[in-house]
Length: 231
Image 1 (cartoon, one colour):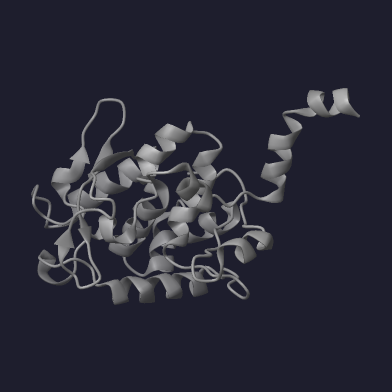
Image 2 (cartoon, one colour; image 1 turned 135 degrees about the vertical axis):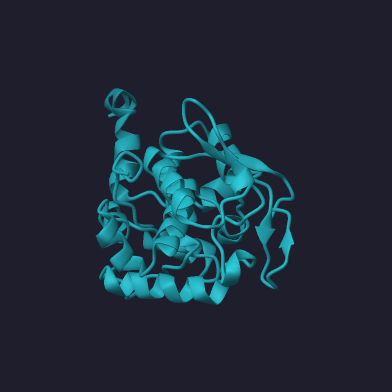
């Protein structure tokens, strides 16, 4: 987990003015992600109340998928590979709880982190619903997806239990997607990042990017020779 969440990130307030409050999302710092997803299972379950919700949000945070896409995941969507498993994202649960295509209408794949892979293997062994057509994360009787309202309540409660500072910040479930994009933008080629997130344009990828001032400084510092030559 530490290799993925490797830097504290918070969106400079100047970008809030640029994009407006309706689209602005804060992102989580490294310390906050570690509070929300401790490595100890007992501590993790205490934050999210139940394993299923802990695992759902961890998969959400470490894959960058939209919450409707995670709600629609079935065991048949797990891509088994000798090197590292992944997930096929081809469906999404809509606001009216119907199942449809992804937001872009296109399918994509994401690679699981080692811990995410282990979590899914553990969950599959624990749940009675593990046939290919079964939902990975489910609501009543395993036949219905988790309700969006339930996820929202669990998310808000987890922030409270983990003592995440929310004053003056717009932290929502979608913030996990923004956080993922921000962290991976500095380590993945743009085309690979877009394939992972499903963004169709560089402008959309940039809109989801929330670099910290320290990250910006490090990128600028890579061009120190140019500055030395001019000044």
